[in-house]
Amino acid sequence: MNICMAGYGMMGVWHSEALKRTDAVLHTAVGRRAEAASAFAERFGYRKWTTSLADALTDPDIDIVVLATPSERHEEQAIASLAAGKHTLIEIPIAMSLAGAERVVAAGEKSGKVYGLSHPMRFRAEREALRSRLSAGEERLRHIAGRFFIPRLRNVGATGYVRSWTDNILWHHFCHFVDLGLFLFDGTPIRRVQSHLGACHEKTGIPMECAVLVETEGGATLLVHGSYHAAFRLYDKLIVTDRDTYFFDTLAATLRASSGTVAMESEQENAARIIFDFLEAVRTHRLPRASGPSVLPAMRVLQSVQDAWDARYGLRAIPGRPID
Image 1 (cartoon, rainbow, N blue to C red):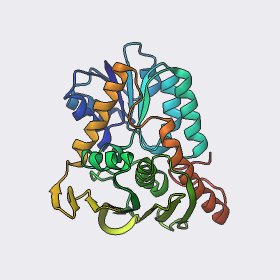
Image 2: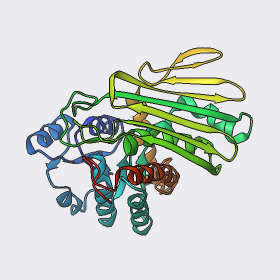
Image 3: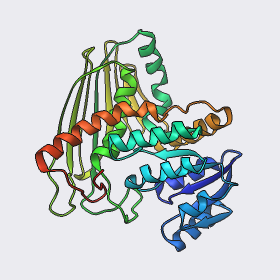
Image 4: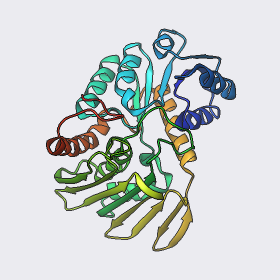
C-alpha cells in the first residue's frame, strides 16, 4: 500500500516512523514549505514530495492518505481525499464543528473507502482490561477526570516548532478527553453537559481556559479542565470505578492503581497502534477502532460547548477556527 503523508509536524513524524515498521510504501510527502517538505521526504525515505495535496490526490498510485495537518484543514482535506478515492486517516479532530464532522462522515460513507480518526486515547493497551470489564458489566464506571495544561502564550508546538497555525483547546485537546469518556460510557445516553470556555485572550486571540462536565443517564460523570496559560505541562486522567481507581499520567508514562504503579507505553508507541490498526482495517476492509460515525457523539458534546460560547460572546471566527 502506497502512503501519502500530509503534514511534517510531530504527528507526521510519529506516523512516518510507525509506517517504517510495516510493509507500507512511503510514497509521497506533502508540506506547506518546499524546503521542509523536501527535507522531511528525504529523512523518512518518501519517494516524492510536493506542496500541493490536490496534486498528490490525482496520483493513482497512492492508496492511503494520512492527514497530519492543522486542525482547521481536516474537514476540507478529508472530503477531498475521500472524493479522490483514497483510504483516509484523519488526525484528531475530524472537523471544527459538528456540521463539519457530519459532512466528513457523509463523504466517507459515500466513498466506500476506509476512513478513520487518530484518537490515541482509544488505543491505550493499559486500558484494555478495564474496558473489557466495563463492557462485561464486571466493573461500573463512576467518574473520569482529565487535566490538560500547557504553555501556549507563544505559538510553539510540543516539539518546539514555531507553528504557522493556531491550536484550539476545545476542538483539539478536549476532543481527546471527551471522546475517551464517551468511548468508555459505551452508548449510555447523556443527561447533561455543562461548560466554561473562556473569553478570547488579548494576546493570542483565542480562548485559553476550558472546563467541560458531562453527566450520563447512568450517573457516571466526565470532568475535563485545562488551560493554555499554564507555566508547565500537566496531562493525565483519573478513572474511578466501583472496584478501583486508575491514574494515567501520560507525561510520566505510568499507571497507578490500588495494586501499585506500573510503566505505560510512551505516547509515540501508543500512537503507532493507530497506524497498525488502520492498515489492518484497509487490508480487511473493516471499520478502524476510531471510525467516523463513532466520533460523532463527542463532536455533539463539543458543539454544545461551542454553542454556549457563541451565545455568550457572539458567533465569530477566531484564529485557527473559521466560522462554519
